[in-house]
Length: 290
Image 1 (cartoon, rainbow, N blue to C red):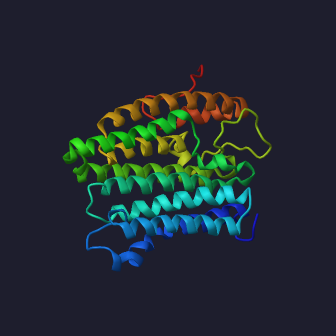
Image 2: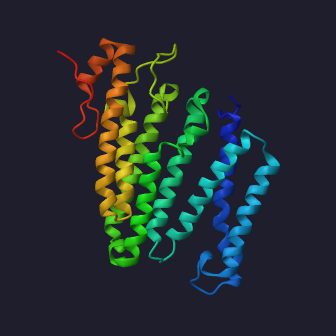
Image 3: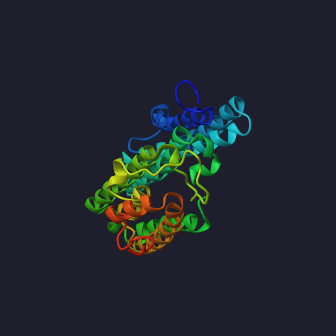
């Protein structure tokens, strides 16, 4: 570990993410060339400036880093860029303002997964820790939500302007994100994105902090974060789809993980399981005979 408590990949990701977020400075640079009320994408100078920024950002990263650090840097920079663009859209009165909130939520979720893994469990750190290639189903679900928002924004724009509903979704997202990251930080090196089939020497049963509330707080957080993104976007179709798909995924994931935990910790985990709920609605985990 480095002196600041972060491995070099983590420090590379922080610099690159901040570099990407610096896209928020572009409106000040292009303000003299755009009409009042215009966004970066609403004018030719703005669009050109955005393309130049992306090219310069990539050039800086190519000069500073070689593989494998460049692979970390370009992903973190892309997520930072998406977060910065989301902020820019969020502060406008555009019909896409709530989509800007979503962009911030999605990009920060994926970047923070990598950063906290770099802090807590650097031995398991990899490019997969960004969760950008989580699964084909996850990717299709994300694209489906973007398509639904775009179609409904076009044919029924009033649906996307229910601000109070989007605010509820934003609070769900913030709650879910906070709970998941609290779980990761509490678990420390015990947390891994991949369900472990073999117990390591340092693997201990965590029952304090948020784990005293729920047996699977990281899954609870992700569950409500996922559903919250669709409430935020006012996507009725994907809201139903995300709820059902997420519930099914976490039901199977909890059962898979609890088989391993009972194997690792035996009666200690069974006693914990009997006193602390999963936190997920109608999901009880592996059945244990009394």
